[in-house]
Image 1: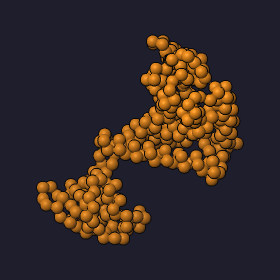
Image 2: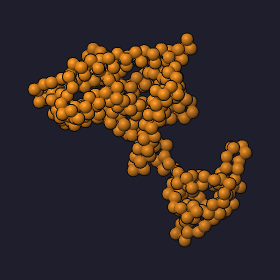
Image 3: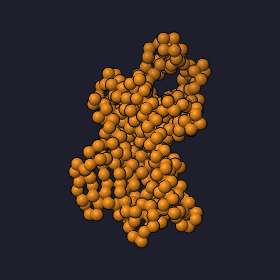
Image 4: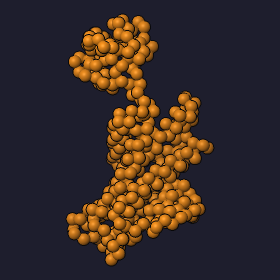
Length: 345
């Protein structure tokens, strides 16, 4: 039950982050924002600050940012539809951008928690190549085969062929660098080859973590995009697509797995990773050039930029309405698949 509540809060937070992106850019562009709401349904609490009503609504499943005349023609300079196309483009697209930024922040925190191996030896296994070559705890590996290395990932990039003998350049204390030859030893019980050393693990190095978080965010976005392409090209059948119920069930299992394997912090980090994936997913999906999504609105704005004037607002609204209906039908199909799979119907 706790995992489900956490998942609901994660979904609400991710949607709020998305709407916050629209809100920030609307404010910066001088658009009148009538209401910024957290949640959906009837109001539970609200307060008006300046010209904007900030509200908390009954169902924590999303949120919205209500702006002055988003579509149409208006003489009101505070209306979104009266703004220049490039301003509208920023307002519409910044929701997805905030989702990507949020995913990056979460993955940066996760990278800090997990840490990364540097090039300083922390432990050695007896009767393994590193110890037999008289390497010591505290030795720093500065190069392999003449290629500079600074972290474990650099080392792994160089020593891909475990049947090969490599020349490691080592620094020990203040002494001059020296070289040793190492060949990985195959361990039958582990089904892998190892040199027999483990590096120091560095946690919460902000710059390094931010880099790793950015790279991982890019990788997640790439995976999400490739997954969507496979769905559209029918490489993945629709009954394999997970919706909100399927993701909630997966999240609950990941929470339980984390609690059993490593305790509360492992469970929390599992949820952070899931939140990052969902946030990146929402960003990618919202940028798809489909009516009713931000990507569809972006297409209309680009057409306006090319034509020098907007399309007929009634026609645009009709296209978005049709897109919304189709989106709801797709949601029903995905939810049905979720219910069948999760509850084994």
